[in-house]
Amino acid sequence: FFPQNNDEQPRQPETRAIMNWLRENHFTASASLHG
Image (tube, rainbow, N blue to C red; front, side):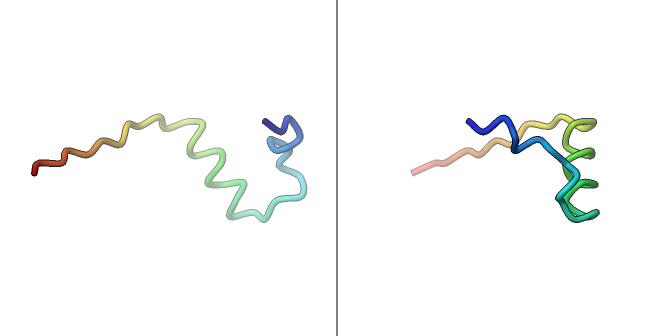
């Protein structure tokens, strides 16, 4: 949606660390609902 959203320079160090971690560690979240 917003190409400039990937710019890490104006971000806080903690936010940059999470962004880097998410790029390196791909995971899948799932849920199962039973009625």
